[in-house]
Amino acid sequence: SNVLTQAPPVSVAPGQTARITCEGDHLGYTNVHWYQQRPGQAPVVVIYDTTGRPSGVPERFSGSYSPDTATLTISRVEAGDEADYYCQVWDSDNNRVLFGGGTRLTVL
Amino acid sequence: QPQLQESGPGLVKASETLSLTCTVSGGSITRTSYYWGWIRQPPGKGLEWIGAIYYSGSSYSNPSLKSRLTLSIDTSKNQFSLTLRSVTAADTAVYYCARRETTRASHYDPWGQGILVRVSS
Image 1 (cartoon, each protein chain N blue to C red):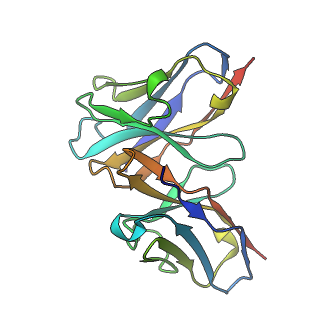
Image 2: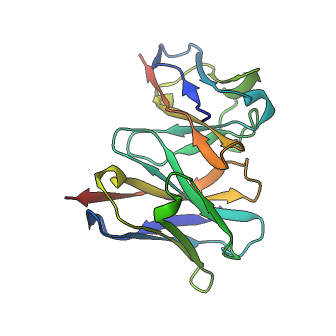
């Protein structure tokens, strides 16, 4: 069955750029969404439909994709960006919503 | 944005039934543009989609849970519910309710704060 594979933990210094990847078959042909989950809180969408940014989410957050890989890029990382990040797609082969395993971003 | 709030028991005995309700405030659950869903997260682990329901009662769910799961909706109370039968320790998780647009490929937003449900042996 389809699986979304997310990168190992990412650590960056404040002001640097963090890139978090999500790999899976056919990612270039479906919408990918990204959620930020701070400790003890519910997930919040930061990128929807692969590249869309909800109102209120800083422009520092952006999404992109290439065949089979979606990427969440966080520019000028701040301490408040420290969180777990999850990608999500609709798995039409198995008629279910699929989440990646999550990537922890640590701000040094 | 509406607000969503989960409610239900925080402790369920193994082999029994887990029942949770999500109350929606600040918006009608009968809006035709949205589905209402459930997602769970075992302690220290990732997110798992449970299922979603439309105001009409039409629903679909994770094939891995389908045999034990019932989703329902009460438009008069602006609530939707989850019932999971024959629970085991593997069902211990924070359960979230969330809203999604009608397109199945859409994202979930907003989410409730979540409710921790522990299954005891």
